[in-house]
Image (cartoon, rainbow, N blue to C red; front, top):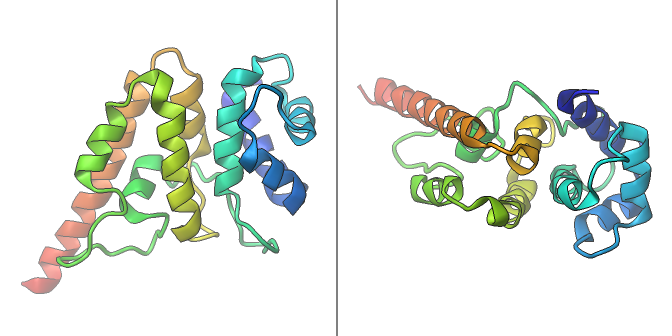
Length: 184
């Protein structure tokens, strides 16, 4: 099973089958032993035989990004069309227009620091970003969760980091261009 297939299954389980208690367990997990919700998810989604120390941060971050409270049919977690870099620019709001007075969700300086984060510290950095995004993002927009997983699971993340920068600056540039068009 491909990483894309696993992430799609994880997203569906978290959104449609896991209750608030299971998701809270997954958001809090940070120890040597993963909660039962993790193991159920691993068994159902096809990563049971993989190293839990590699997968636990991915699952924790996806649980943080899963909308809290009562679920709506429009809620989304994984959306391959809303790239992680774009979300870091627009804060998870696909209607974000940017503009002369508005700033990106993650400043260019913070993006540069995030992209330069050593691999052994990336899960912690991404957890902080996910926490901030969880409170601001549009519940129906989703984010490309495969990109998140690649950042934490791939042995070489050079291409993944470049794609994040590309989609961030494409989103930022488009917003700036719209702003300049409206001011002229």
